Length: 504
Image (cartoon, helix red, strand yellow):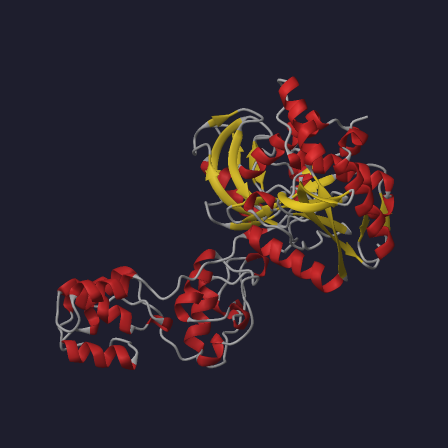
């Protein structure tokens, strides 16, 4: 049976990946696929990638649902031949989600076996009984709201949503779910143990509204301000929506009900506008934004940043760029492409900057792998031009254009944005004259590039106009001294102002 039933598991793309968000399924249950066919999208902190079937078969179960956050190795779906009984499929799913059996069927793919090995090994047990449930939280309801940022507390999507409605900090809830995640049941147990009341499901709230009278709303939970306003306007609290903290009717809920009914006080338009436009919108951080926040905070805390700045004239570079683009139909070389090449050449001349440092060991690289910061809708990513020192401008230009396009589509492979020996961040296209960038660890330096602009410069004792760009290098002072950074910037300026020297 093992050879006929195959698991689709959450893959591990890159060393830093520990979990993924299930996206869109490309096949439905009962549909047949061949090896290599796209099955389901998975979003990580950096990319959206697609899991492909490692063997042919029929999709018998979509175990993971869109929006679920699952760890590496978790079961996503099941492939099996059509003649396998549903009971065998259910038993297979139970084994995969309940425990990882030793001596798994050797016919399963190596990739799947590695994914399973990363899942926690737990002893299979009968269905839980009340006596085995975790002890409920015994702190008071008001104390459940206290604590630090709980965005990184493992929790199911439903539990996280309900925690916001109840005003509960997930740090204060005992987790009993798989992989130590807080579940809906855990949250409700904590609320009840703290003396609170559970929010009725939508159907129950609608039923309550149907039988309630304007005078019979004493049992409806509401804030004091909402209760007083409802009484003044003759509105039953039972007719109001419930959007306040801990399942209470708020002032905005009463105003919304008045707006819908067209009752006194302010005009219907005014109240509707007040109810429809909150003072702020609470946004949850994406996985990418959380990763960026964590890495940059770590960089600023651990790496002693220092900066050196220099100006470089671009006129010769711009002239060479025009010549290349006018004479080569396959080229559309940008100033940024020149900067990538110039950085690579400068790194070869001053190799002490072409390093990675993890706090313990220092690595100096033979080739310059230049990471370029690319802005996305919800963050940024740094695709890498590998061995830029050994590539020509046209090759760099075409490769970088492809990387940027796929980066914005979320289609980069992990090896295309992880690593790198040096970073370049260019905000010149936004009109920024000069800025300082934060080092991208484990790299030890990053170049910030401003806009090229016409400035007055002194040449041979005369003031003339030139196109000048301001460059700022942020370096990790633990491994790069000021004199080293200065030599690098001088070399970079030379390559930019005399571009022919980097075209040989």
